[in-house]
Length: 389
Image (cartoon, rainbow, N blue to C red):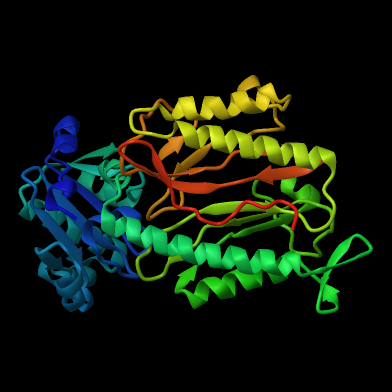
């Protein structure tokens, strides 16, 4: 990525601060985004008003950081006298906070911006040491919402793996036998856990992984994040929601299909057709400059015109969630496609995932992931939508 994309000078000026400081590890997407470096133990990143960046890590990680990180200025714990501070403080957290304090002082920083989730222990320590701490909204989340070609390739790879996993799951369901209202495979009841296992194994074959994959059936599908571990029913909706992440590139993809093995009721068929129509309408609207709220409102309008409930009218059944969300280093990131007035921009990667949920009937959800282009959008999801298998 171009260096200018990492500059947060404007955000620092607006906050009236000298620098931005964050700590994190391999679970912190912001710190990976800006450093291109990962470590199991916490490390720190600092960007000053003039744009100078510092990576603060353990001595053990220095060699790897010099190879992998895009930040050239690297400071280590021992540079800040960590061992001596440990002997004096006899507490690793206090010693680490003291090292951060020394790092800031060495850079001439007095007022520092930190993310909302900055550890309160470090914040209190630094405040007592004489620094002014200003919690601010992450300045990198907005930058992350605009994907460059390298990021898009990583997302497309994860999506390809997700589609392979979806194909394996739907093939297993389609090939099942019906017996007394349930699905069977190889003489045994086909369970949600078995379908989930097939999804996980397929993703691993492509160097991807997924946590909290949704496999739900029957009335469980009426809960948008419901799951079914046990036997899957025939003639009932099965929601498959897969959001894989590339283990190497760390970018996510996201997609959902709803399928059914057997005979679908007329009510379920109408629900499926309504969700498909709502998604089609939303996809037609996606382009730069369009408020995300308008896309969301259009989805609600499609449902309401067909006689379904939406939370727009205060209902707790029917369409009860937002239309979509950004996808990248986190499965849910900017921009949200809901009631927010954010404008879509070329380079956004978002999902369009309308759904309907009724406790007595079940749920239907369809989710595609699209790239907002200069003139509209490119659907990154190639897998067909087929309800009855």
